[in-house]
Image (cartoon, rainbow, N blue to C red; front, side):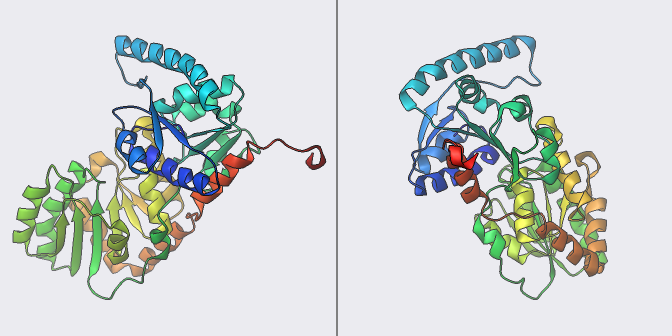
Length: 356
């Protein structure tokens, strides 16, 4: 299992790894010391072999040369490791961490299966597209980046709870704001500055706001004085339960976030993180907006007035809100981890003469 650095790479890979293990096969992860895989993979009960490798994009010349040298030396080192591990196949979530094991596998003619969660593949998956055995995609439009006949629209592994949310309880129109586990200053500031606008308009809404740790104490104290219904949390452990309470969700547009929105069938306003690699969050948000599942606003444009107006307008237009949720649900794919595991195992099996 190759890919690391962020939860968006590691968590889906762990979900697939669990399914592979249930099917009776052994799994080994390759990752780095500094990536989240260093904590998440051992905690999930899997072996992690560590490599030293760095990214190549948006770096100075000296750092880029150093990273390229590490990529080459770590790729060469994978050959000796493969002699010990004897991998039957490589599963890649992309990213620079996946570079050495994937390159070594391609040279050794070991089957490579990639899972591309974003509408537009990252540099690693684009670079190896013509040589992968199978590409598992999250958006229909991603097919054009891979050879015909090698893609399957599996979606991204998402917790089953998102597919089976209870009906929203009756009550105030509820908006969930989340910039991810670390929060988003842009989303936090827009929400905070919009509190007086909601109060002055006497709009009957409830806010559930995950701030992340850096701004939690400040926003929590101010929200208590704002006179609005709702709650401010540093971190929401049970995100499916928060989704179940929401009529509208305001969030970033990472692959995991949009996959959860689709599984839950929730309408959203997406504000892509502007510094995401290859602008993949923007591409994800554009795909959701084209499907009628979300409204899109750029980070540089998102402010209190836009937040207030968007919530006010959708609060008054429930038909559009419902249609957005239904469109989001059409983008959902259940059983992604199980299907990915089966494909990964299938590519290791030789094709019989009778089946040709």
